[in-house]
Image 1: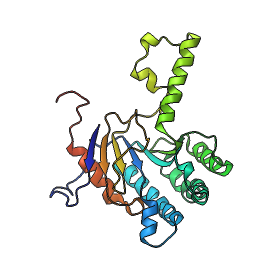
Image 2 (image 1 turned 90 degrees about the horizontal axis):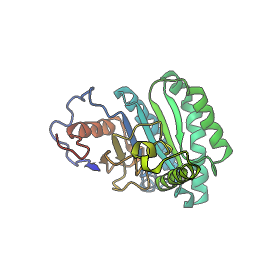
Image 3 (image 1 turned 120 degrees about the vertical axis):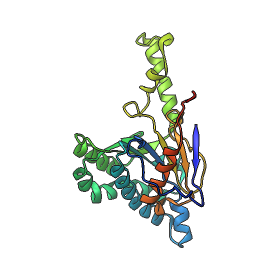
Length: 253
């Protein structure tokens, strides 16, 4: 894995034009810092999540304008259920609130909405909003806006291993022929490419159980900025840093 740290003083060429022939096709984002953003302002944590919803729209537009093909937003992890009930309930209302406001514009922009995660445990109103958005945008051919909701990578990998075991026991899969490509098809992200670039906000430097298998050769970029303050310029700075790197995938170039 390769990682990139946001510099406190960007280099002189930080504002150089982006190479439109070298745009990451799949960008994954760990949207972190909503609660701390709210605390700094003397606001309840849910106010930070509400502000973070606006950042989702900003970055979706920025990614679409750059030509990113897939944007995966880590919206709620399998571990987030341990948070206070009031906060969890509010987070579960955000998809319906966001989509009620933004869905029509997403449709007009040819964006396809998807969800990666487990449906069990999610409230009916959350699922209804996501199901409607997926149905209304299913035939769109532009940016894939993929919400990782009730998602955890360790569980994803374990479930894939169980699938492999069941298929091997049933005789429909030859373990001697099991390779990375076959295993990848057992994951929740089977129809998506691995992330080229992963962004995490708020200054934390960890994956937090997010796309562990898929991020084997992803370029990492960490920002001190809290997610509600993250904007188009920050996103473009991450892409610039990505373009400065040479991706070797374990080999030499």
